[in-house]
Length: 293
Image (tube, rainbow, N blue to C red; front, side, top):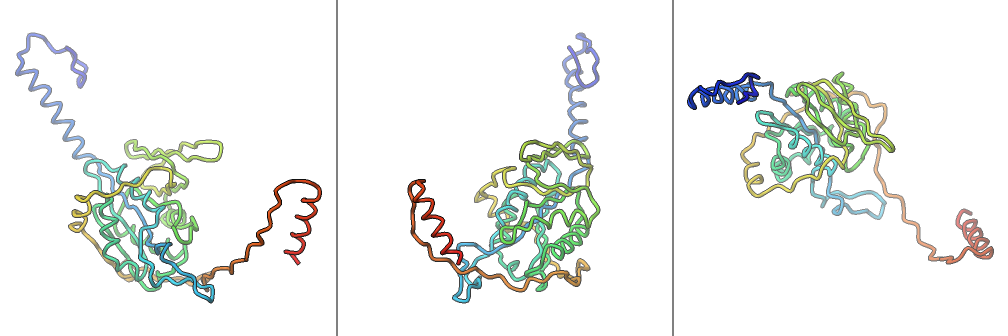
């Protein structure tokens, strides 16, 4: 009989109680190693955005958000799910967001906590309501340092602006290894092995923790929270900070968001050319000239 733990042969003359004792010791040591090993602390960042279908366009071509409910950006749902799938026994997941008045929505708080995170941290300030990527990254970096983490996860971009900058900027501000376009994550001791799916290649990158990752929308399919998870979300810790609590102050912006407007819709011409004859091509050219003049 082979003991795969010690690599020694067990004397068949030993009693069954001795064998049970050996395997009991082995089992206990394995469990103890798992429980006393370094637990990973994961922070998954998300942004609250208005529900697109509730946004209306005013006669002045501006956007009206008055009736738009807040929701988690769809790309950040992938980051939350990635954290939930990656976490093992003893690991901790914290959800982190910064923003303005949208953070007061208690329904959204319960939504994010029902998807796997153990706690929620929020930084609310009026100046973060429409913050550009740099200011958002500065606030997230300060809050993440205050919480403490091994791995910081982001979606590939926000559901409203989709600048794809915040995660990379945050990693740079923290002076940590950072990579984007991550389509797969695997743990390997105190390191993380990730895959980046490019147009014609798949890159495999090994990162030492702590690190910052921005995941793509095809890394997983976000779960639909169960009723048990939704009910349990109300019992999880929610920490709300002011900007002063994380020592964040806005810097002088190099660019300023002045307005968001919708271009006027151009009336369709309803002209269809269903062949490629010389006459049709000439007619098409004439129509294009008229439209441009």
